[in-house]
Image (tube, rainbow, N blue to C red; front, side, top):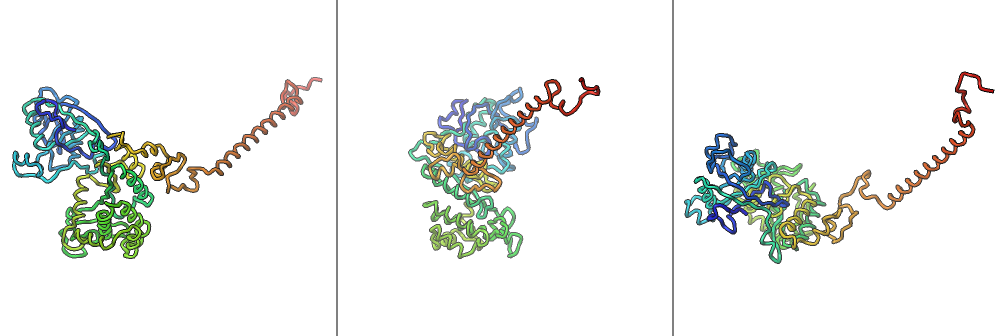
Amino acid sequence: LLSIQIPFELHNPDGEEHLHAHFGSQPVHHRGHLGGYVYYTDDDLCNGWNTHNKTSTYPKNKEDIQQPFILMAPTSKHCQPVVLARQAQLFGASAVVFAHQDCLCSDANCTNLHGPDCVPDVALTNDGSGGSVSIPSFLLYKESAQKVIGQLKNDQPVLMELAWGLPNKTLDAETPKFTHTLWSTANDALLDVITLQHFKTISKAVAQHGANFEPKFSIVSGERFGCDKQIENGGPCDHLCTNHGRYCALNAFHIGGQKVLNETLRRLCIWEEFGKIAPETYWDYIIYHLQHCAQNFYNDESCLRDAYKHSKVDETILLSCMSDSGAITGDMQNSMFEKQLQEQRHAGIVTTPSLTVDGHILEDANSFVYFEGLCRRYFIHNWTRTPEFCYQCSACHDPIGCVQTGKCERGSVPKGLIPDDNDDVVPSTKTKKKKKTGWIWFWTISFLAGCAGCYVYYKKQQEGGSGGGVLNSYFQLSNEDPIA
C-alpha cells in the first residue's frame, strides 16, 4: 500500500498505483507499516549524496533534514534502482519512493496529459547486490508522483503511508491463488535428484491449495556480449550461443552451451504443452533426464525417447512446439527464450537455482526453505487458509516426508539423506542396546573396584596401627631407635 494522508485532498482510500521492490525489507516472511514525512530531491542519487544537494531538496527548510523521513527521488537511467535505494539508506532515509519519469504505454491518462512518449513496463529489480538494502523501496507512477512533487516544491508537507506484506485479496476467495517458481538452468549442478523429488512433492501438495508452480530458466543475452554481430562460424561465441548469437548458456563441464539451450527449449515446451495441465509430467521428465541422461547421454536421442516414454510426453507435439517457437538455428528470435530473458530481468534473478514465492526471492534454494516460504505465504496473509500440513509437518525432522505421507515421525531423517559410516544420525535399536550395556558394565566394574580398594585400605590401617598409618608397617619414619 502507498497512500497520501496529508494533504487529504490527495488521499485515495484504495491507495496509489505503485510497485514494490524485489529487494529491501519486503521478503515473503516480512511485513510492516510506516507513515512518514516526505522529502523530495531533484538530484540523481547515482552520484551519492553530499551537503551541496540541500538546495535541491523540498520542502525547503532552514533546519537540517530531520529524521525519520521518507525520501522521494526520480528514477535514473544511469544506475540500477538498488544503487539509488542504497544511497537513500546511507543518507538516513527510513524508506525510499522512486518517482517514475515516464508514462506507461498502457496508461492512456498519463500519455494524454504528458505526451505520447512512453515505456512498455517498469520493474524494481535486484541486480544481485540488494542484500545490503534494508529499507523498503517503492515506485510511484508518473501521474501520481507529479502531484506529490508539486506539493513538496510548493514547500507544503506531505505525510505518506507505506505498508507491505498486507493480506492479499485473492486469499479471501474460496481458492487462494499465487505463483511460485524455480529458476534454474537445464544443467544445474546444484539440483540433484533428491532435491527435485522434494520440490515435486511440495509443489504437488500446495497445488491443491491454489499455489501454481511454474519453471523458469536463466539465459544469457548474447547481444550484451556482441555475439549477435558474429558473422562466421567458429567465432568467440559459437560454442555457447544459438539463433545467430542472440541467446547463450554457460558451458557445463563436457556439455556445450548450445546443447544446454536445446535442452532448455525442450523443457520449456514440455511445460507449455504438458506440464501446465499435468505438472507431474514435467517433474518426471527432468528427474529421469538427470538420473539417466545428464552425465553421458545429455542429448542422446535414445535416452531422450526413454525419458519421453517414462514421463508420457508425445514427441511429435514436443518437436512441433520447439520448431514453432523459433528453434535454435537460423537468424531469428525464439519467442520462449525472449520471454525468459524479459522475465529474468524483471524478477531480478542473478543466481541459480533460485526459488520465488509470489515474486519474492527466497534466501536459499533447498526443499526446507521452499516448504517454509510457501507455508509462511499462507500464514502471514491469511492464516485461516493455511493448509493443515503446514502446521502438522513444520516441527518434524522430515517435513517433506510428512507432506508426502501425512505422518510426522519426529525421530526420522529426511529421505535421501544417508549418513556417513562414522555419522550415526539416528542410531539403530541394536546400537542403542550395545551402548546401554557397555555403560552398565563400566559402572559395575568401577563400583566393585572401589569396594575392593576400600577393603584393602581398611586392612592395612588395622595392621599398621592408629598412629603411623599404612606405611608404618614397612618403613621406620625416624632416625631414632624404636622404643622398646
